[in-house]
Amino acid sequence: MAIAIGIIVMLFSVATGVGLQKKIKEKISGFNGDIQISTYDTNNSKITVSPVDINQEFYPDFPAVPNVKKVQVYATKAGIIRTPDEFEGVILKGVDTAYDWSFFNEYIVSGNKPVIGDKVSNEVLISAKTAGRLRLKTGDSFHMFFVKDDPNKAPNSRKFTVSGVFNSGFEEFDETFIIGDIKHIQRINKWEADQVGGFEIFVHDFDKLKETGFEIYNSIDPSLNAFTTAEKFPAIFEWLSLFDTNIIVIIAIMILIAGINMITALLVLILERTQMIGVLKALGNHNWSIRKIFLYNAAFLIGKGMLWGNAIGVGLLLIQKYFGLITLDPETYYVNQAPVHLSAYSLLWINLGTLILCLLMLIIPSFIVSKISPVKAIKFD
Image (cartoon, rainbow, N blue to C red; front, side):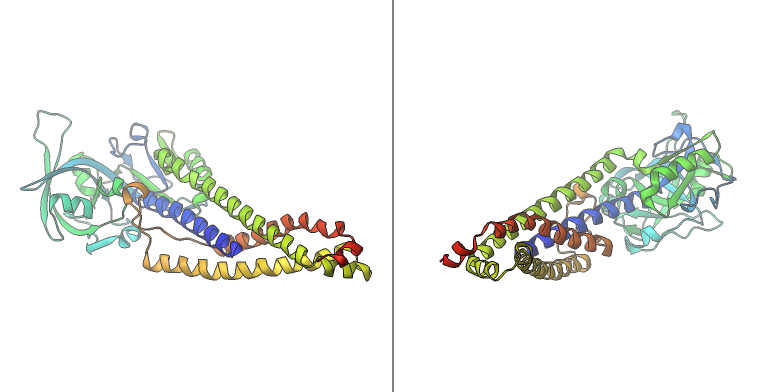
C-alpha cells in the first residue's frame, strides 16, 4: 500500500507539474510566439512603435536556424474600446493572412476567427473577459479609439465587429489583447504595406529556446533585436522553474517513505522467519543465498505495489485529462483546470527509479541475516 500510494503521488506530481509548465508556455507562445524580432526601441514592449521592413532574409522561412518551425508578422497598437455603457483599454494585435490560428481554435467559445484577406477586414476576435465587461457578443459592433502622437489632434477611430470570442484562461493576456487585421495598424501609423511591427518565431523544441534565441540574434540584421518569451516574461518562467524543484522534492520524499516502509516490512519478515533462517544455515546455505530469498520477496511486494499504483494513478490522470475534475484559479495558475502530461519516458523512470532505490535501501537491513546464529535461531520462539 505504501508503494502504491507513493507511485500515485509521484505520477500526479510529475504529470500535473509538467502539464502546467507546458500549458502555460503554450499559452505565452500562442499570444507572443517563442521568440520575437523587432526594433530595439520596442524591446520587451507590448506596443510596437517603429516599423520593420517585411522583406527580410528570414521571412517567411528561416533556414539558417534548424529549430525554427515558422515565422509570422504582427503589429500592436493600444487603444480604448467605447460602447454606449462602458469603455475598456486594450491592445489591438494586428495579423495578416498567413497568421496561424491553431492556438486560438482551441479556445474559441463562440463565433469564428476573423476572416482576413487582401481587403481591410473589420472583424476582430476578443476575449470572454473583455466581452463580459463591455457586454459584447458575437456579431456586435463597437468603436475603438487610438490616440495620436499629437495630443491636440482628435484620436483615430475604427469600427470593429466581433467575429468570435475566446477564453484561454490566461487572464493577463485575455484582458489585454484583441486580434484583428494588421492593415488597420499600418494605416493608423501611416506605414507602408511592407512595414510591420515585428516577427513572431515558433520553434520545434522549446527546451532549446535559449540557444535558438542566440542563433537567431546572430543571424539577423544588427538594427534588429531578438528576445525570447523567457526574457520578456522572466517572473512567470522563474515561477515555472520552481515546479521542477517541487517535483524532485516530492519524488524524493515518496521514495524515502516507501523505502522506510519496505525496510520495516523486511525486518518483520526476517523476525518471523528466524527459525527458518537457522534451519537453512544449519543445512549449509550461505548468508547471501538466504538474503536473496528476502530480497526477492521484497521485490515481489514492491512490484505488486507498483502495479496497483500505476493502474490507479494512470486511471485517475486519464479521468482528469478528459473530464477536468480538478479545477484551478486562473488568476493564480493561468489555467482553469489542472493539465496533465505524462510521457512513457517519465512513467518508465518513476517505476524503475522506485524499484532500484527501494531494493538498494533493503540491502543493508538484509545483513541482519548474517548475524543470526543457527543454534539460537532454531531455539528462537
